View 1 (tube, rainbow over the protein chains, first blue to last red):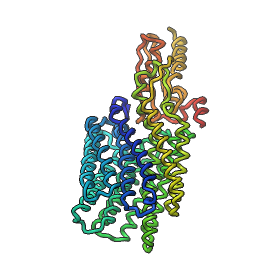
View 2 (view 1 turned 135 degrees about the vertical axis):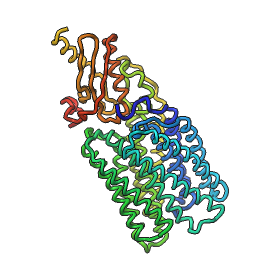
View 3 (view 1 turned 90 degrees about the horizontal axis):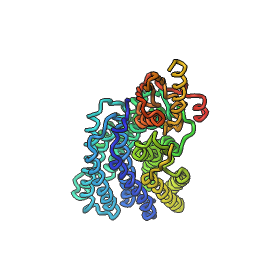
View 4 (view 1 turned 180 degrees about the vertical axis):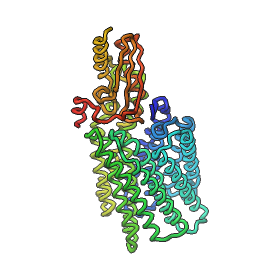
Length: 428
Length: 105
């Protein structure tokens, strides 16, 4: 058959630790938001917010993405992962690096620990990049989804390079522009170049597969690929060389049209889906896709409104980051965990038992009740945090942050329930 | 075996394969319309031509194993050959009335 052969999938010992550690980091993120207290309402570049952001983006989101990607490379690239050993080494170095990096930010060790932590992080991500690129070279089917993934890898390198540059500048102070200029580049390339490209690449394969929809217009993905990458490349050059505000708006518009083209592809898939009722995993996923609109609108305000007081500008910028990390990325990951992890574990535990004994369905490996409660708390936490950030309302922030803690606990319960599922042997 | 007996055997085997589920869609592969042809030669050899709901189906190999094991449980000394094709492409018109009812089509 074309596509994934089960024997192309990596051993579960490569994938599972990423979900455990990612879930653990999600819990830490929720706790750190509570501990950060009123710092959450301060300027977006204060050390507590930066620490939470890096824990959320690298510890939570990137770790789960790494794990999922190792499993999905056979689906998207139609070949096996280049090296499972390298993936295991990458896991440990990334896990240690992200904890060290978050600690460095949290205690404001900008001129001491941060330099070393950023170098470790850069090297860890580089190991991942090598593994994906060498897997891609083996691939015979270089489709649009795999091109998105490779583009995201390219942007990850640039993001990490800029991030490490900022860290070194704290100690050696050699950059001409202020830190906020490079921080903007670092954050934009990371969210649009790395995460958005990656999610489009993986999502364009997985979402139609899970919705069971056919005869989709792949041209929309090609348009999306070209526009997002050309727009982002142009934007990067503009930030480093031209600094032209009109060019910024043009690049922004090009990227937004590219994103809309992807949303349109997913909408087609949704309309043509065979399974009408969405399970909890796909409810999260569709919510994530719809929520892309929010950061687009907020970024429009940030680009077009020039005369704005700093305090408000900082608050809108924090909300912009929040809408991407929690509104889009976290929602997508929470949903796709319920779609991918049960299958990964189910395949490992039952692939040799199918046909011989009655096996449970993959979705029966987790508690749907917990998943649903988690969903409602998640909506509550996102709305409360959004309300709190925009209106500078600390009570709403507290409700949102404690709700997020409940979400993280429930998510971890279900993840561990899936991972430690015991094989049920029922005669057919 | 005469022609009628072979046809009856093929029908019975299709009913047997209703025990094989697509774990993602949660419908058996027969009602889902994944089995394009099932041919019995009358001499312990079954040929199946089938498809998957998507070429990238991560459970493809598992479904094939499930088919073989399910038939072997009833006919241990039979040889089973499965040919997976993607033309014609699977679509909803291939789903049985029972399958459509479950999917809400």
